[in-house]
Image (cartoon, rainbow, N blue to C red):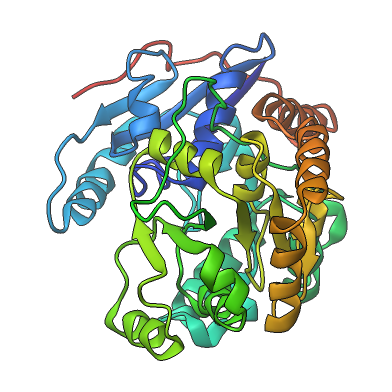
Length: 387
């Protein structure tokens, strides 16, 4: 049996979010596998996914239930004090680090790291304090015995930019989590107009939300027939409002937020989901949209074509006229909408958290069997630790 541990980093940082969802799905599934003994070593965590498993034997820590200004800093400080007691005397077969850190946590015969993208290295001008973050990431990559990339695109970028030996890398695609429950309502705008949907953060600039808005503003027909809904990412900033006003579309673009059920309602009600990003390490939102029968128009760059396959209308994200063409070719063609819905349903079969967990387990087993780790040691973490 492989003694496997995940460290605290992402669970002490994200209440919700893609990376913590990824590790939660892995830990939850592999904990039920006969070949693994799983531990999440997180003395104090804020993650709400993990809190749902708080009574499980694999969670070693407690939920910090309060949110206030600077609460993550408090959690980090407490963790640095408590972590030695949680790791002391333990040597795992494999530790899978959940994010990038200067120094390693815990003791293991083998370390695995997941690299999600190389965005900050490709677009350093869009990130504050990138030099320190880059050095931390390099340190984590350098000490890893094996690196999992969430797309082939990310793997190629990692090898090219950091000079990593390709034999140290593998690709494991992510799954998606939103369920297409038939009882989910359809979100509608107060204006009654159909809408084009954008989901997620709008900054940094590589997300290209304003490129999408500019493409939309060049089409009198789209402006007349559709509004834009930007789900998540917080309210519009002053600079965003000024740009929307300059484009003359300030009354056509709506920012909304909410929980997963509300996001599902917007996917279900959208005329099309638009994914204009200049770069993505993977890209879960197009899969989520497909799961709700929402046709997708998306960038033809980085990992996006790798994920969506043939199940989208592609455009060059740097060419606003091409983006407009792609959107119009779908929303004004019922046959194209139906085609993309069918292709989307077929494409979803290639992605699931079960598949992600099984392929990741295969990597762990390969490392173990090739002698990268010693024979498993008797577990000392049979029960939850508390304090």
